[in-house]
Length: 175
Picture (cartoon, rainbow, N blue to C red):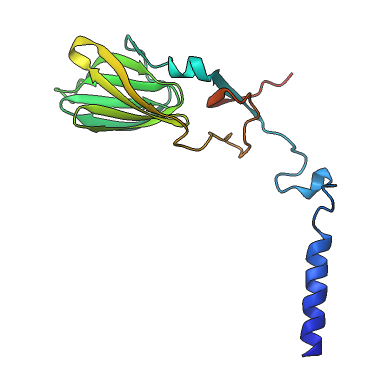
């Protein structure tokens, strides 16, 4: 019994010794790849005011980085990761016709219920009323900070101003 207590004591002391003491931690005390103390990516951020007015209906554009696809009522929605949604007339699935691009910075998903489009826009959830045939778009509701902050592809949290919202990440240029 005494041996078990001594082993437990030494094990606890060993674990505690490997921890940072009084906030004095060396760079190598942190988990991550050796030699990397910051992200290889930089955040793409918008001020909260610009972010909340950034949803726009634009003419169609080519798909560059597609994400999820949604089909409903003769329309095809293709997510452009972190940028928005391509809208196609899909009555002839072998030849969909481009209609619009809905610019929604930071978006990756859409759900549609009762004619309302629910979109995640970075950290917010927005409800959009959209009429494709007459090219009408309106953000009818916004619920702030529903989703967690977007972290970089290599796992780092952004260091941006408090009134900013991260809508994506881009690889830092070597210089």
